Length: 415
Ligand SMILES: [Cu+2]
Image (cartoon, rainbow, N blue to C red; front, side, top):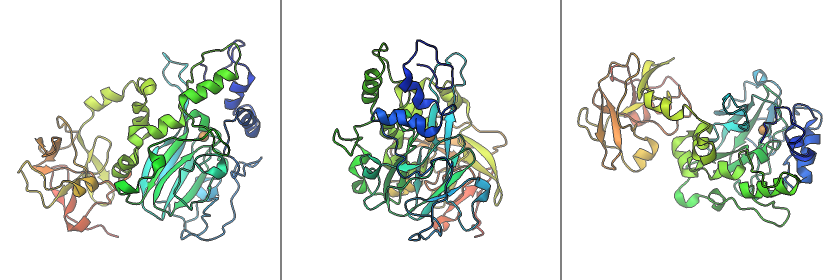
């Protein structure tokens, strides 16, 4: 299958399929018209984009974060123009990723959210930043023609269609699991999951494990690969048995990396981790495994407040726990504690540049191999979302970041 960005040879497809993706050359709604004709849905009912790329919805109140409407959110045409009163707690980027591998130029582009899974607290504001054209953030909701995949009572919220460099902010008030999609790129698998609040196992909604739809309107059938292939072949004479080359929403939302409990525990799930879960695209990450083998297990990162601190291979902040005994090669953190403070595990500890701490490993009671620095077992904090976050520092007066030599830095956060 051809990439939408490449010229279409005469013998490739009949009109409708390429029209879906030809956003660069056709007005957005015209290309969406083709999708609607194929019963694939657009979800743009509330996007209110029309000819204007960004429309700022009226602020109707009902929200603690002033100006963020529970249905329309808050759109800004330029990320620089976000009012100071609206401080986002998290950021998600909306990407169109073209194939870079010259050996595989026919790989489909990936339209995706990154991170594709995040855990936030109830009341947190998430900023969605569009780094490529024509994206929306839209709730799966019967009012949009889909199975409801947001908590009960949450309105069928949607952003307008975003242009490059614009952003949309939304406040997630109800605890639960929110699945959202991009209207123009939904059929290409552009979906993501936001887990709000501290979900217990029995709080998990049914839709988190099942990607069910219905053959009956208004709920459209599930966007499985089989369904999309059926639609593809039903509408492209002379191209029988075409395979669906793009991602599908079901593949994204069913990926083990997006299991709600996993999202809750990890805090942030990068798109690459979900892609690695999808068999036919796992090979599209040529350097993924290699990079993991050579990447340092523990490295240094500069932090504005604490100076050089130890971080993991993804540059996420590492912590030590005062309840542990230095050099004891055992951990005092299991069960609920380990959910909040996942141990840094690795088969072997590889020190990055300027790490002077003695790195070793020991076997936890659960069988995993945990890394220690200068005798202190190392942990991540589930609430840290991005490199540079140190939300665990000083937690309960017993969790601390460490310097390059593995010495705990026991200073309370300034704020
Ligand atoms: Cu999109």
